[in-house]
Length: 102
Image (cartoon, rainbow, N blue to C red; front, side, top):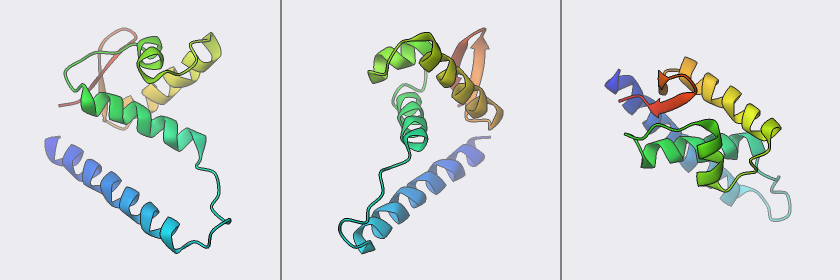
């Protein structure tokens, strides 16, 4: 499992580097806005990477990341956390709690 996580993190780093290279090669003025969903996923993943031993609830993540805490927004984050759980990046140590898989 640790090997898979390391491979995934390395792949994410490669993708970030690729994105920077493409942005540098793209003519000025044609740079599209970053996809909001991708930047939100990255913010969530970064929060777990910086706090690998901490458990979070969706609302706590919103507060940590300065995101809106209305119910609809938090529900979207719950769905994102569920996807990260199914992908093996997170574990669920308790109901509604998520933690980085180690």
